[in-house]
Amino acid sequence: MVAVAGCGHGHRPREWSRARRGLLWTMTRRAAALLAALLVLPGCMSRTGGAASGPSTEPTTTTTTTTTATTTTTTTTAPPPPATPPADGGNVNACTDGTCEVRVTAPTVIPVDPAFGLSYVSLETITGDEVSMVAVIAGGSFTVGCDGDPRCGTGIVAGDVPTATLTGHPGAVFTLNRVRLTMAAVADGAATLRLSTV
Image 1 (cartoon, rainbow, N blue to C red):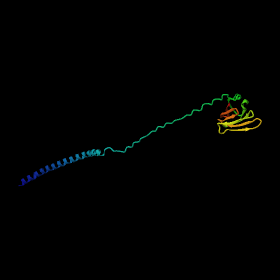
Image 2: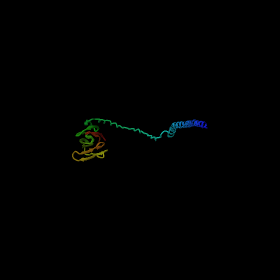
Image 3: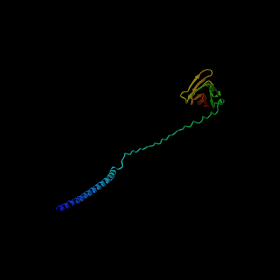
Image 4: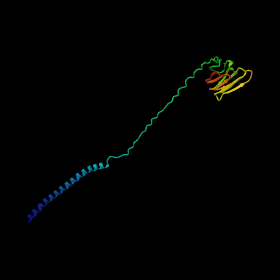
């Protein structure tokens, strides 16, 4: 009986050892599977997270620059052509026949043939564009007038030798008996006078 009992007790540790080895093997496989799952999970999460997050979208600002072309037009005014010199220059003796064009400064006496009812014209002063003259009338009758200049003035001084006072500006036309005196220009202290007969 003792030997049988002893034999029975001798086989239990071997069976227990097999059971333990089986348990350990199962636990080891489970642990390995769990470890493998843990190692794979971060990669999956990373891929999933990356796919979910996607590229970030930021607002885009578009700036449009408009350039306006500016055209500058410069107008250049050509200087006026030089004035044509008077036909007779400063030769007042050319006016004796009642026809001439002269440029004179004050004081100047312009002789005229008395047959035209005028003995001479004396240019007295030039102030700015205003010219003052005295005309000596020949004969007993006289006609004096002024046109073309709203500021012109005439006057008659009676006496043995009648005289007419004349004040005019560029454009003035005086009638002195049979002589027409035109004030063509006044500039730089000189006057251009044109005489003709009527």
